Image 1 (spheres, rainbow, N blue to C red):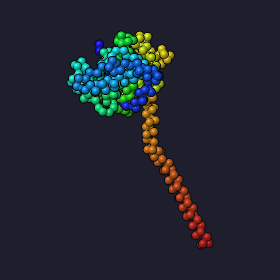
Image 2: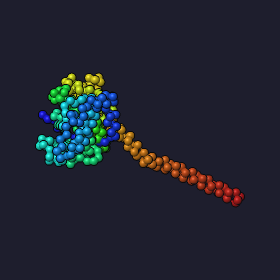
Image 3: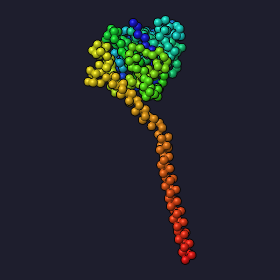
Image 4: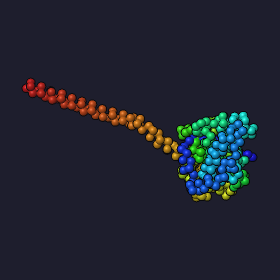
Length: 325
Ligand SMILES: [Zn+2]
C-alpha cells in the first residue's frame, strides 16, 4: 500500500543542514560527483511550466536528494519523479484526498514520487520550494530505505519520519513552537507517541502539535545520541534485527530506549525553558528582586534619622537644663 507522507517544517541557515549530517564531507562531495545529474536522478513533470523552470526545479530537487542521502547515509538508485501542479485540484485523486488545508506537498514514498502544489508555495521558508523539496526528499530516502531493507514490510514510525524531515530540511512548518510544546508537556497533553507510529492526526491543532513535538524530540535525539546511532537503530529495525526501535536502541546502548529518551526529553524541555525564561526576563527579575532590598535600605535610613532626631532632642533638653541651672 502506498505510503503518503505530509510535510511540515523551521528554517535554519543552509550550512546547518550540512553540519547535521554525519557523513564526512569528502564522501558527501563524492556522492555529488557520482550523481549523474537531474536528468537521470530526478524527473520533473510540470506541463504548465517552461523548460527553464522545470530544469531549475530539477536542480533544486537533486540537491535536496543528495543532502538527504548524505544525512541518512543511504543512496537512492531509482529515479525520483517530482510532479508540480498549479492547484491542489489538479492533483490525482489518490494524492488530493491526502492533502489537508496546510499541506504544500506530499511524498508517495514507496513509489519515489513527490507532488507539489504551487498555489500553496510561498517565497520564504518554510513553505518555499527549496525547503519543501528538502522535506519531501527526506521522506523519499527513508521510504527507499524501508523498501531496500524490509521490502516495504516494515516502516519507520511517523514521528521519526516527520522529525527527520523537519530537522534535515532545517524548517518547522508552523515556525518556532517551543512554548506550545512546553505547554503540552506541562499539561500532559502531548500527542501520544503510540498515536504517531503508523498514523497522523487529522485535526489541525493536533497535527501542528505532532509536527512540533516530533521535530523537537528528533533534534534532542540528534544532540544526545547522534544521527549515526538514530539511523543505525532504524536500519536494525528495518532489517528485522529488533522488534521495534526501542529494542534496537537497547541493543546498541545496553539499556537505553526511545521511550526512556522521550521522558528525558520532556524533563529537558521544562528545564531548558525555565533557564530561557530567566535569561529573557533578567532585567525585570532584577528589578523585582531589588524592591525588597530598596525597602530595607529605606527602613534603615528612616530608623537612623529617627535615632539622630532623638539624640538631638535629648541634647537640647540637656542644654535647657544646664541653662536653667
Ligand atoms: Zn513530512
